[in-house]
Length: 287
Length: 287
Ligand SMILES: Nc1ncnc2c1ncn2[C@@H]1O[C@H](COP(=O)(O)OP(=O)(O)O)[C@@H](O)[C@H]1O
Ligand SMILES: Nc1ncnc2c1ncn2[C@@H]1O[C@H](COP(=O)(O)OP(=O)(O)O)[C@@H](O)[C@H]1O
Ligand SMILES: [Zn+2]
Ligand SMILES: [Zn+2]
Image (cartoon, rainbow over the protein chains, first blue to last red):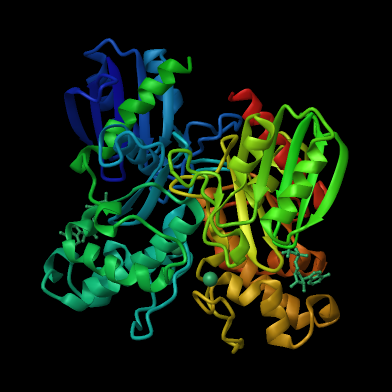
């Protein structure tokens, strides 16, 4: 069996399955403190003969194999998890290869293997939820370098009629500060799900996400863009992106027809956990 | 011998050498019309026994091997070269494998193999000259997907005291429209080289380039950033980038010490031609 963990800030999803993406058992465990959460995680996997483990994790994390902090969750605001060596914990418990990457890189890998970008060697997975993050597959490999990408905090141009100051603790009005779920709630005074009928909300959201997609496309040139996360449940967001993206790009690059280029996750909520399964599979191969 | 071509808008640099980066002969040929320029190019290489050819080209170009227009220079404003099948021309003349990529991807490959990023599997090469472009190596591979990156045209935030409208024919005030050599000349009324003493010129230039580097770093996380092109001859530009980049990033990601992270090309003017030699070498290996 391959073991997969989607380690999130509110819950851990654990699954066992195989390299075809088939999941045979899964469990959700609340994210409390490592001692509690990881004990439950290990207990779940101990029911199986685990050949390798893949972890897609919330971050920031250290994915540089030459670093002494490799396999750690690093400077997270969730203090109980700061500097937590999640890879080491799993290696000690199971003695098998462990693949480790960000939740969004894992989701991109899941979508590129089994989902909306199946068969493509390149895609971008963006989540717009409590925060904004993105992962990517480039020439079949997970996008990483000095560290993993932090695409949610890119600069955007403020809409001339938008006076919301932004709520990113670092940058104020970066993309995440202007367009993640909490920014929507702060700006309009209601949760995103309660604003479905308010056209101007999703038009503005599309204005910022279209800018982000322009930057991502010019810099990475992905073959497919997958937009997930709570906010992507508002289908008007896709319409607004389709409206604004051509206004920003001005035909400078030619993109495929937008409704098939920027799409929902093909795997629904399973992009991340399926990608983690693939991280396990790759860890086994590389061993 | 490996053959290398750095195909530029004003001149073609052609060289023969080997996979260690050694160049044994080279020539510069003016870029006029394909019939003239390519005749000279072929004549030069015919003096040698060419095993494979690498081309780093001005663009836009088609580098998608599955595309019918693969190997063409596509929608360039240099009309004589529009849709010109440069790869096919060289294949017909020499019957050897041809590697083909953008000038800036080639330069990134050259720097990652022999230059300032030697030994790294990741780097970003930015040129700020007549235009702005960038190429990258990601996990040892050339960055490409749907097409090649077009990083010069990302959106930047206008400096509050800058009233220059920008000169990009597509976007007006995108990065290239605000910060390439011609934008500097337009805004200040003198050529860049004549503005060395004007501190405010290079401060503003650094303001825009720091924004670009922030976006590139958040999205690609390169291990080293190499800044070339005519404008990078002003060393004050590096100082201004060092000043503004931390103001934009706000410690959200940690970067290496900036003076060793953002550097001049290790190969001087030879990044591109050396990278083209590596494209030739890779084309031979992949054959
Ligand atoms: N249907 C919806 N429409 C708009 N916003 C939503 C919707 N569902 C959730 N959200 C917003 O998305 C955020 C939660 O994102 P989600 O992707 O579900 O979780 P997380 O990012 O924490 O993993 C919240 O800010 C919430 O208000
Ligand atoms: N020393 C310099 N200082 C500032 N700008 C320069 C300098 N040298 C060249 N430039 C500017 O760079 C541009 C030419 O860029 P360059 O990289 O030399 O060529 P190209 O981009 O055409 O290959 C021109 O706009 C020129 O004014
Ligand atoms: Zn931010
Ligand atoms: Zn532009």
